[in-house]
Length: 235
Image 1: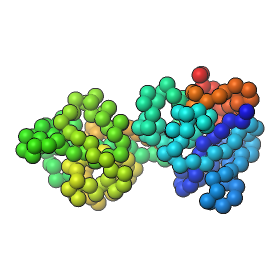
Image 2: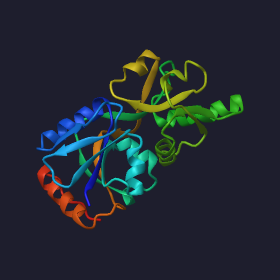
Image 3: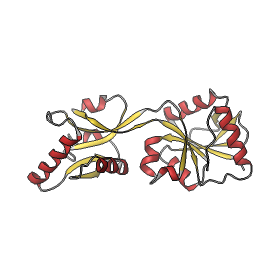
């Protein structure tokens, strides 16, 4: 059985993944047109390339339908409950860096930390009769983080795109979103709380604990790990 390696199917993340493996002597490339999600592997025996969206890869890993997958560490933590029991973190890849943060309006001059946000949230509910709204698509990570920090008087509202604009559009009072440069936040007059970094994400190579590692797949994984300078995971 071959090792199925899931890689983002397009964009910068795909290109950088191809470059990372190429630097370790493994050539990944598409076969056919960009509309065909097929590819090939050269330089690593027993490895099969599977092209997927970055958001699909955590699910496919958890189901054991792929053996290895490259995706953002934020997506694995968000989409998989108890993620460490389902996948093994093999290697941070050094690209795709972004921070999941909590940001509030820049005009909130007296709100710089989470304890300030907690105080504002209590006051907001007393004044308006409903909880302060935080727009995000990262419900699990945000909820777990705020619970650890003791912030409770809020509600999460779903935002699958243009999250930074929700405050301006009056559909949320704060946001939790991924940012790399912070430029979009500043353009929308938002500021990051000084202790509001939830997770520092980057592209990471994961292995599925529940995949079938019998037959030739175990040997193929061992050879690939040796070639890429990665410690062999223990399942």
